[in-house]
Length: 104
Image (cartoon, rainbow, N blue to C red; front, side):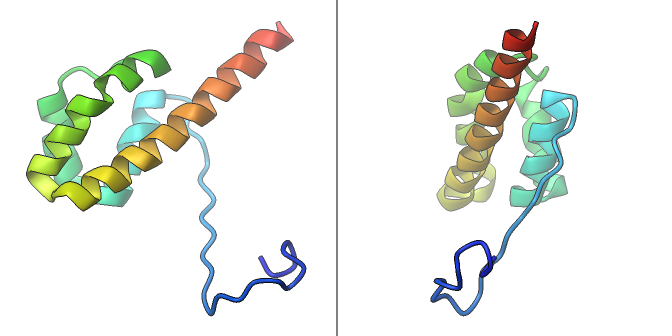
């Protein structure tokens, strides 16, 4: 990381997380949820969420409901953290869909 920043980092600790994208959007978001709120909480929240949406847009519409469920089980801080992580993944999937459409 220091090489990428020309040794300009002043932090004592820098963490870089690389995530491999899964082909299934629902599986990807569930894995992110497990990383943030744990496997047991994810199982509970996903069960309450019902059938996972198929598209990026459907997921974006369900995020407020998902955030409320996570907040009820895990608190506001973890809910905000999870939603931020999910939004980044959704943006990445949307960008990949756009590139794939343009290549056709």
